[in-house]
Length: 154
Image (cartoon, rainbow, N blue to C red; front, side, top):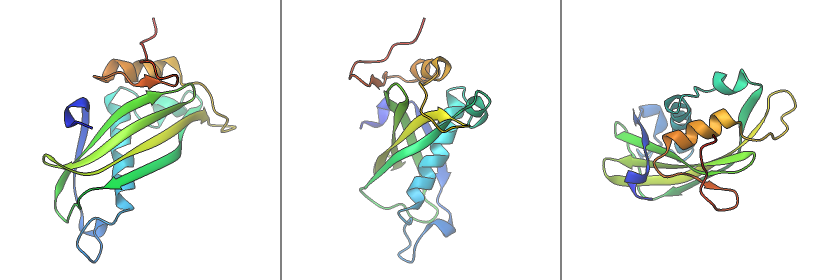
């Protein structure tokens, strides 16, 4: 994905504990980077995690995570983790994420979350406040589960 389709970016510096004996970021740590950036994304759209959701009796539950590796990050690199919502379904949403060192893409992937109740963990429709926050934030509207662009509720 072109970097300019992402409105949100979170920077971090690779710490010594995150690299393996080869001196590169251990592959599983990219999921931690994705999680940190997703949390900051929620804050940027005005829905700080977890309270914006849990105070309403809902939460996000990860059901899928993918990673594709292009090049490694190394100790002390400053990397940018880019996040954007690419799909809003009825009860699920998909975030695309990329890790860049400067202009160089290193890792790309996605996280798929299901919105569910905090008490029974049963899937529930994405609430209007969250859908509107995402649609009001993104430069490129995420697709809807039927492939059409989403629209802000009125």
